[in-house]
Image (cartoon, rainbow, N blue to C red):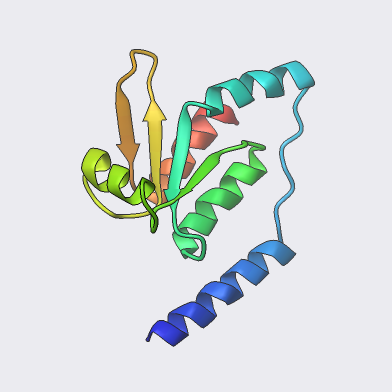
Length: 119
């Protein structure tokens, strides 16, 4: 089963690279505002996870320079478990204006949030 997962994961990554989406065009000042807002976000993910690829593709379509953190390695794995509550990916860490942290786990919810906030 591990071999099948590994092969499928690599296939997903190849297809993602070949059929990479085009980013949203914004004026330079608006893109800078978006870049500053995105600094408050971090995506905990596994590189070949199909749901993580789905979220990363959506972020690329929206032209978001989203920080990604590999949830398989420390310290990101520990942070995800201890603060987020589960070792489940994709997970978007959202730092709010009042310094509260929200952890969003479902890929469709993450994509809807990104589209609502940045589209």
